[in-house]
Image (cartoon, rainbow, N blue to C red):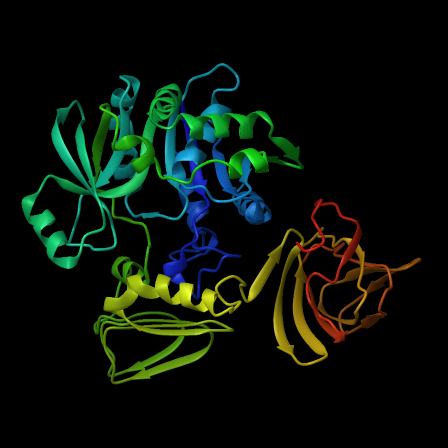
Length: 469
């Protein structure tokens, strides 16, 4: 039996402004009606697997749970208090997968990849099983299609059953070296996917990174249940060094193997990668949303919120969201990460905050704001229930535009239907619920001296959140 381990902690900064700290790329619907996480889970259909373990950041726990619910998937969601890269995440998953005395093969998959040929993917996984059962730590190397500077490479050696000996990891090369690696042959793109026996990985980690293993063991032994989630112990896990499985284990051990993967794979690591996997029009353009292109070639244009028009340009990336616009040359797609770092250093909120903020009960999006007012569009899913709360610096006016709201204000509980409204005074205890079968849509007008999300005092919350969540 294979135990899937889905690594769901990536940040996807090179896809800003689509990908944000609050809403990273694994939760986005970039290539289909399903998110990248949902596609990763669907990719397991047809393999003999147990229920997945999903390793993700605690800030995204309700996003993970909601996207699982949407596709009817059950999983064990394990929450990391901070990102510590792949080696500790896989170690904690291996410990948890072994907690009932079992020793499964772990199929480690990042949650933010795209694979076009599911049959070829599953064929490579099945080929890797015999090697993993023999004690090899198996990674999957993607057959390269062009000299790519955005991926690391794997050097392959002698044949090993259905795979080859892994001889070296090669850092992301420049264009000239990438071309030489392709011409040389016997090198594959590093996919970041693995198949390995839990005990084999833990033994190798103990050999090369004993302090890391000890920290993970403590984080797992002191983990606490929180609703349907398992929270790793914060102090123990944060004391763990941050390192990838490649550096911590794979490049040091003698039992590393690679199985080739030719399955239309992409890690969607940049907008240029997104352009590459799409089907362009006759002019080489890829568009999403309301876009009008004239005398434009080989460009990617994404319009989320309004019309985007281009004229007389080529090789551009144009991405429009409700609060930001990115314009870049396609050759500079990998440098968006540096741009995000500069925005963060400047104290800008756009790298972190998504225009649409997701909550376990639904979502909200800011429409307008001023010195003493803010307007939001709020969506509450059927059965959704906000916390019983009060604000000390703002009043709220709710106007229902679709559905029916159940509103509690102090001792009163009443229904507010479409085209009706209600007022929440400063300091009043209140709650909003959707008792209906369709999403509740309303406009909220806030007014007051301070309108921050941390002006909230929760007295009761079915989702057990902190005040600023």
